[in-house]
Length: 205
Image (cartoon, rainbow, N blue to C red; front, side, top):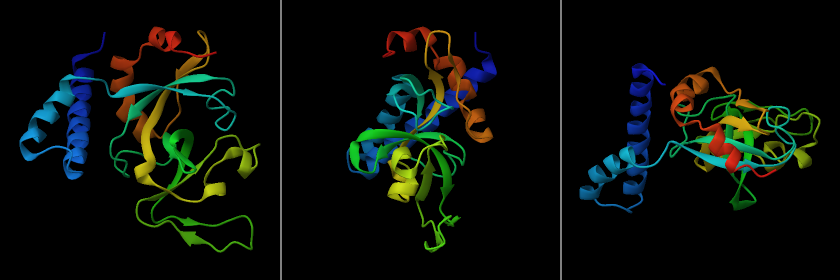
């Protein structure tokens, strides 16, 4: 049973998420001025702040198992340095196919100077709203890892969520190691929205 303080933090996160999502729709012209207020409250009382994502592959081993894993992902409607942090395991749109999604770790954001191990490559600085993502499995070559070493910087707008829990089997599951800030922000969500039984029902072996 979650404590009162946990519920207060959770509700605060729901309000922040609802406002961000509604404002994003408003800026895109999808809702009017009158609909903005109603949409905020509708998002507060309906739906969750997390969703389940199925992942398979060795790119994020050992953080996420090489076999199929069911992941609990926190939704991030607007990705910026106040919502996602260096070291977070994120879900982002595949730069080669926007209908697919990749799970990678956020390694650098705008303003960071990127220096290659290959002396032939010139250093460069990540521009505004750009980020650099990497696979955790350092045994893989860039082409196998399919990360920024292959496709370069990606837009922060391509980030859709932060992975907060991973289930590999009924007895092998647990929180994902993210940045200190990310894990602190997600603690109330894990207490309230984590349902391991539901994750097992949706798990694909």
